[in-house]
Length: 118
Length: 152
Image (cartoon, rainbow over all chains, first blue to last red; front, side, top):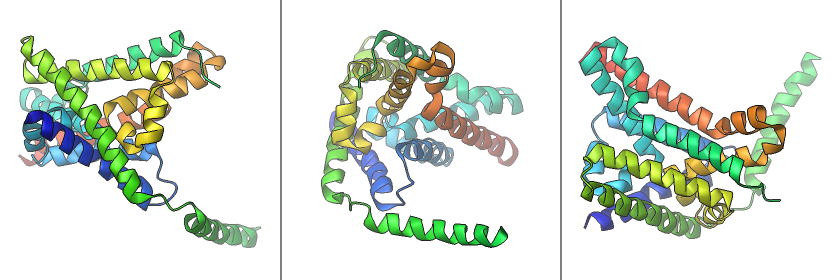
């Protein structure tokens, strides 16, 4: 069942992104979609509304970039709980460290390994 | 001079309106269907990887992080060999919104500007789209933390 919900919720979140691109100004680029999803995920997460989605859909909620925002926001909140104000500066990036490092390292290595296509 | 500035602002608005009118109307339902299928399949793949790591004894958060790293690796590789761009072309936002699309945006712009060198080519172009995403994500999460500190 978790596979079903991962597919449906993950697909539905991507449909929201598609609607943002198709139904708004031509200036709304993929970069705007990604930025919107990260920030929206963090804000929705702050109100406690994203975790239920993660509980239901697993990777369907964590793989879209809104899940990255959720990770950052929850990391910051638990950082504040542990270290007070300093935690607001350390918690988010600490929680997202694996994803950020993987993206930079694998991205760099891929750009070095492969040839650009014409 | 100031007159021409005023006109050019107005012209800019009119131009934007015209572009919005004549840009090809996207086939909305078709695009929605494709985004749903491609995005859903990528998340389904993520769920398989997540379950795999959980069965190996990682807790939920560790397994989710390992899943992200695995998907980022796959997307970086598939972008390098030119397959992921086809996924995005077919799936639209279905290929952009998952974390694989984030990795794809990093690798494709870094590859494109590779000729400009390892510092200003690859080094800075990796962050053409990842940079804004990190800025917005980190600032929003920081604001959430500050809000949480003062109001709870």
